[in-house]
Image (cartoon, rainbow, N blue to C red; front, side):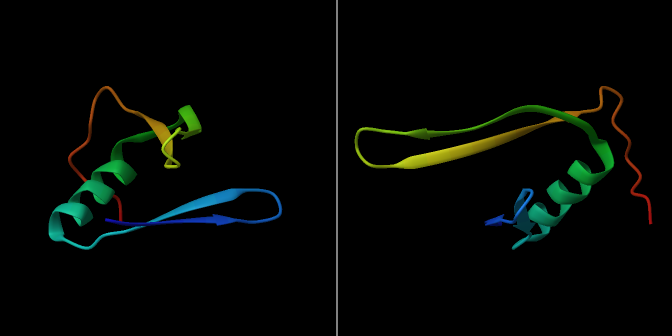
Amino acid sequence: MKVELNEYDGCFKIALTAETVADAATLARMSANRTTELRSCGANAYKDGTFCGHVVIGKRKNNTSTIKQ
């Protein structure tokens, strides 16, 4: 999965690009089963100089297996 983070005037955008069929399936499931709830978002800086960030999006309890067109 290719991940790109962009900053705009009023928001940040995390762009996800599938590189494999498994990645594409994961993106399709995320689109079909996500909620609008942002559960967590943050970044960490470590003593060794590395940085990492995360975004956690809510997921429906009753997943759907169909994808809207």
